[in-house]
Length: 221
Image (tube, rainbow, N blue to C red; front, side, top):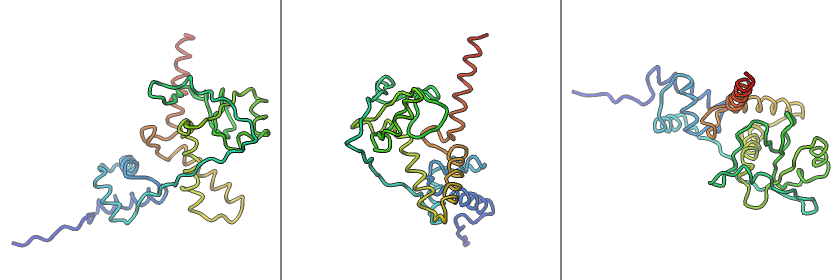
């Protein structure tokens, strides 16, 4: 009796799964196995990381990762005091659990209580500092050894460069602005973030906002 070997990923269901995986990867080529497993799960496919690795090898795809790059500061600019010590836990991690309490870099609205950045020259520049002072926003700057305190916004800038800008060629500034706007919409509403349990920033942010609103209503009632 002879048995014919079954080819990997050859069934109709497997092909549908691979097509779905390819569609997800085409939109999010920077997803690793964990987020691809979650994204496929959201589409109804139950798969572990081991099988995901096999599927990625079969499709000859792999996640794109950004490279490390450091901040450039201007020694002539004034450096402001670091204000996030009060938010440290016993593991020396900065914990911000109230929406809009601390924001990082150039966010336009809503108005934060504290604006925390690194010591890059764009943030120590007088023009930038004066805007914050005008709106009574406390200025906080990371010192040496505090690079991870601002890691969320640092990761955003790395992400947009490696996930959008470096992958495309723009013919005009208007096309660049349009692409960045689309990326930021996708980043907040559709891109899965492993640091917040493979949820989108919108899901995490508005859940926190709704929880605060509920607490306020309970206190009023």
